Length: 209
View: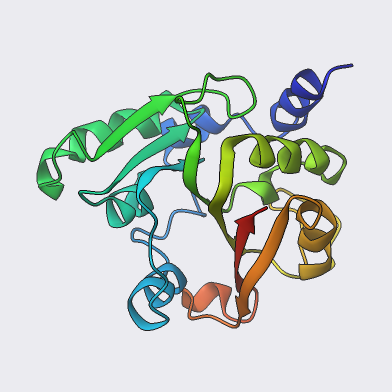
């Protein structure tokens, strides 16, 4: 079985995401960007790279809009057409030109990346949607998409040891096992977060080798 097929099956074994978006059953959607991401950029002063960025599982696209700037074109990607339609409908209200952001309905494991890949990928509530046995495919795909010297921001959630999901429990050790071969962890610290996720998140930034 190929990595692509098995990874797709891992996600398909999870809930029907578009159906949940259509019904408004989206407990993971907190209505704004994560305080942890804002803290990383504005208080910890992480410098965003130039080029292209990607937010897989972008939902309503809060993070996509926040990260986009004149030198960093951001793409929001989701399996849910309903979520992407919302992103596009809200585009004008954000006053962000289309040259800085775009949104696509696509499978993370089976799409054609732009020439030169991505200089930044932000993962939050995405890896945790996959059953643990499919995590190696996630790591492989990240290593394929992030260019050498580029960055993978992982807002690690939910930290814990529960066995049910999604969201499936994660830990720093799990990320180390998945990413250390192709990435170097350059930042790891406690972070601000939504009240309901207090103590269940840590921020990590990885640089592609």
